[in-house]
Image (tube, rainbow, N blue to C red):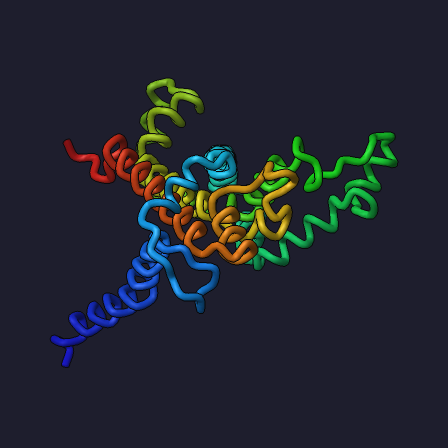
Length: 286
C-alpha cells in the first residue's frame, strides 16, 4: 500500500490544481475574446478587440503604473525592515522568545480586521491618530481620501501586515549560518558592517531571491487591502490591475474587458518572473 501513496497524493494534487487553478484560468482567458455583459449572457466573439480597447485606455496604464509602485515600494520596505528585525530578534536577550511571538502577530490577523482597524485609527474626523495630531497642533490628514496620501497609506498597511512573514523567514535563515564564520571574521578584524555584507547577506541570498519573487507576485496581485481601504480611489490614485479588472467585470458588467485586463496582468507577471529567473537563478551553482 505504501508503494501507491506517493503516486496517489501526486495525482490528487494534480487534479486539484487542474480543477481549481488551471481550469478557471483557461476559462478566464477565453472570456477575454468575447463581448459579454454578464456570466449568464450570450457571449459574442470579438477576437482581440477587448485587448485593443484595454491597451488604448489610459486607465489600464495608470493601473499598471500604480501596481508597480505599490508592489515595488512595499517589497523594498518589507525586505529592509524584515532583515533589520530578523537581525535584532536573532541577538540573545531576555524575553526574546516572547518578542518573536509578538512580532509575528500582525501576519495572523485577518486582512479585513487589520484594514478596518487602520481606517478607524486614522479617520480624518474621529481617528485616534487625528486626535493626537490635533493635540500637537497639527492639521488633520485624510490618509485614504487624498491622492497624495492614499498610495502611501495602503503601502504602509501592507508593510505592517506582511513584514512579520519576511522577518520570520529571514530569522530562520540566520539560524542556519555557522557561528564559526562570524568568529573567524572577528579575529580577522571585520566589523559589524563588513560581517553583514560578506557573511550574512551572501548566506541569505537564496532566501532573499525567493522572498522577493513571492512577495512581488503576491503584492502585484493583492486585491483586498486596496479594495477595503480606498476602492482604487481617490480618482484612480491607488487603482491597480486587480481592482481595475474587478471594476470592469463586476461593477460595469463588462466581463470580456475585465478578463482581458486579468489576462494582460498575468502576461506582465509571466514576463517579469521569466526575466527575474534569468537574472537571479535559484541554483547558485555555475
